[in-house]
Picture: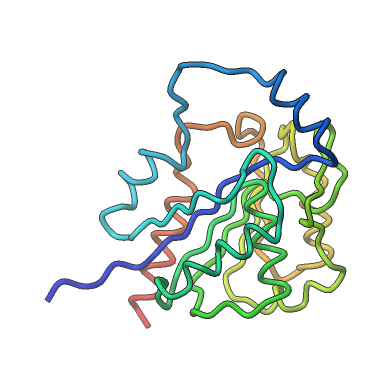
Amino acid sequence: MKKEKLQIMLIHGGTTFKNRHDYLSFLKNIEVSLRKKIKWSGEYFDKKLGKDFDIIRPTMPLGLNAKYEDWKIYLERFFPLLKDNIVLIGSSLGGIFLAKYLSENSFPKKILSIYLIAAPFDNTLPNEDLVGGFKLKSDLSRLSKLNNLNLLFSENDDVVPVSHSQKYYNKLPSANIKVYKNKNGHFKIKTFPELIKMIENDKINFLKK
């Protein structure tokens, strides 16, 4: 009998703005291109893990002008479709979104592992405003109690300063916090073999139980 695949839910990043004027200014000045963007979380991720996992990528509402409450509502719509022993991955804004959600709410399924990649901790970003309701509460004890919590940062990240890793560590000393020397700034990479290996090990350890 064919074994059922474990699930991975990957929450993408986004941007937030203090007001509509800033948002419209962003739209008028953002660089646009016809070139296909190749990201570690795209075809590479599917090729490396798709045979063993069912990869779920919700398109979170208004990614270019995100609001936490909108994302929360949309995430919870997926709950009836999720299964136990899921891997949760949040990248950038998706990372702090998961950190906030899991620190304030009970997740309805058993979580195998959590990966928060280049997740901002607070609104001390050099070029962006972290608003829209994504601010973490001071008490992260609920999040700290979850097993296999991993936070990944890059020393040369120009969007989320590496100093945010220490801020998370101060609140989550039991988490596995990894700082890479160079992930091309804000994890603008085509491949991410370290993450693939960690997730594969998660599954191996799960199957051994």
